[in-house]
Amino acid sequence: MSKDTVQDGLVVSMEYTLIVDGEVLDTSDGVGPLQFLAGHDNIVPGLEREMIGMKIGESKDVVVSPEDGYGEFDEEAFMEVPRSEFPTDMEIEEGVELSVTDEDGKNQYARVESLTDETVSLDFNHPLAGAELHFSVKVIELRDPTEEELDHGHVHEEGHDH
Ligand code: ZN
Image 1 (spheres, helix red, strand yellow):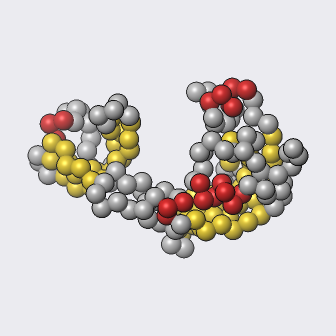
Image 2 (image 1 turned 120 degrees about the horizontal axis):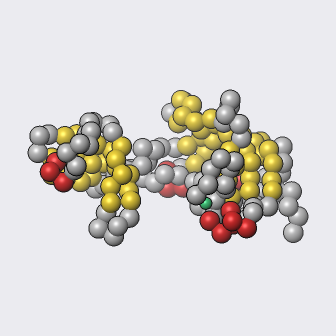
C-alpha cells in the first residue's frame, strides 16, 4: 500500500487551527506541527475520518459535529461531592480542573462548577462538549511509527517518554 496518503498506522505531522464560535482555541502556528498516530483514537473521530486519504501538502477545512467531536453536553454529568472527601490542602475554586478517581479506579477530569462550605459540584463534561469544531488542517509529513510508538498507540516526540 502506498504511504503517501494519511492512513491508519502512520504518524501524521500536521499544521492545524481549531476555531469554536469564531474564536481560535488552539493552533500549531508558532509551535510547529502536531504529530499523531492515525487509527489509535489520538484525535477526535470526525477529524480523523476526514483526514484519511489526504496527501502531503494538502489542506482542508473540516467541520466536526459534537457527536464526532467531544460529545454532546450532558445535563446529567454533574455530581455533588462532600467537601470532606477532598484533601484539606487541595485548592478548590470555581472553574478549576481536577482529576477524580471513579469507582473503577479510572481517572476522570472534572471541573468545579460551584461550591459551598459543605459540597463541591463537579461537571464531568469535556470543556468542548456540545461544541461544533472548525478545523483547518494541512498535512506536512507522513512516516512509519517506531515499534514502541505502535505498541503504545501514540507518538513519542523528542523529550517525551512515557
Ligand atoms: Zn508511550
